[in-house]
Image (cartoon, rainbow, N blue to C red; front, side):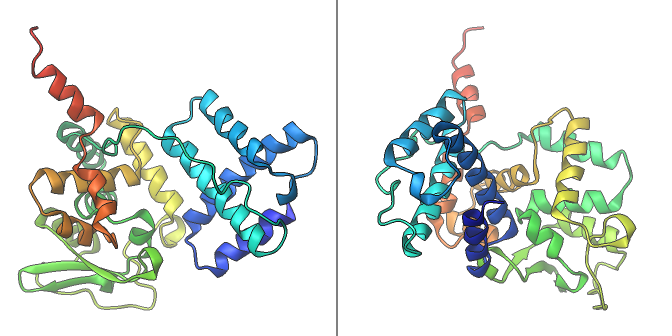
Amino acid sequence: MNHYLQDFLDHLYDQDKSEQTIRAYLADLSAFSRWIEEQTEDPFSPHIITPLDTVNYRRHLQDNKKSPATINRHIASLSSFCKWSCDMNFIPTNPIENIKGVSRESIGPKSLERREQLALIRAVQKTGKKRDLAIVNLLLHTGIRVGELCSLRKDDLIIEGRKAMIRISKGKGNKMRYVPLNSTALKSIISHIGISGDSRPAPSADGHMFYGQKERPLTERGVRHLIKKYAYNAKIPWVSPHALRHTCAKNLIDAGQPIDRVAKILGHSSINTTAIYTMPTETDLQHAAESISWT
């Protein structure tokens, strides 16, 4: 790996960025470094990046039909790298400082319709695997992130009378929060870990809630593979764990829950982040158009 990229990744680790965030930075910057090396025929370094290069790279991404969200993520990753390069005195100024991203009309993130949610659940139920049903129901009914799910331990399940919740010890930014469980999610967890509905699991030396192959704790990659398999069987192959998080948020908003409560459940530090779920999705707009159709 290019030593500038390696040093930047080390910086991200020092900043306690999540593994998923660091992987995204690496993918974006690796793609840019390959592109600019082809353009300049020089080894990648911060010194060869110019404002014109960043504009041309943005156009390159647009020409390759990348979505505005993807393009803006690439620009943000490159901007962070260039800012770090300035702070390290590798370059005098940030060549991407005044480069704007790509704008588009705001719509809500893609989420599963009710029939698609039911199709996914049926695909899991056909296998009879209690673990997998608990995973899908947790993602769909709590909106937790895949990394948060993999970090869950059995004693993170808290049952107090008629209330139940899970403790997220390592949320985004290392923030701890408690997420309420509805009856559907709770029933799936209880069935999976094998406890009575009025008790709390006893902690153990290695009491992870979900295990994968060879009795090792389930990984994020394992969860993504699991969801992809069931989504394919349900004929909705685009679905990912994060799409289930979007779906949970959309379900809560559509059910009339206040945005501040939705933000708390999702672990958002600002309701401005949650506000995207109040925007209509492409499916919502399609339904609106169909509502006045004459045929």
